[in-house]
Length: 238
Image (cartoon, rainbow, N blue to C red; front, side, top):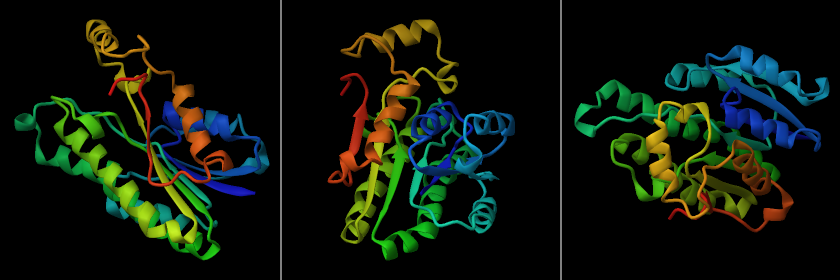
């Protein structure tokens, strides 16, 4: 059995990924922060043997991340980082606390959790890490400078760590979605959505299931020679 830790399992993407991966010889550790009901509902879609643990942690707090790591007694084969928060403000209007929160949730927690579970992957010479980044990490976004910076840092983390642990047969990759139809984007007006769609060659936003399918691919044997890659799932918007 493959033990899969999904960070951000209570979100729409995390839930979709788990539903996509279940029934394929995998067992899950589900992380959530405040939305326990979403994780409880998700657990109903899993067989009893497929759910190892649900674990709560505020990724914005270093102490909470440490406690989460300590509460996981299992060997981890795959980590999927599907957590994230949106932020849309001018850099000049962004306060330092929000900057810190973005950094901890999107980057430091990723490094801390990876650091904790990598040694066993390296020893076993087997493992997968997939980070959900963003198109903004590659091309940047006005009014989302801090968010874009954190996503760009995630991409650098993926490329660097892939080189570091690749010789131990541990693969590290990322997904860089464009506009995805999720609640995280619900604050965007219909007019703004239509303007965004005009820039997408496929003329529509992505479905959550399409992003989940890309993650499924990256942790499968079908992608066994893909490492340090940022897979763009953006409908051709480059």
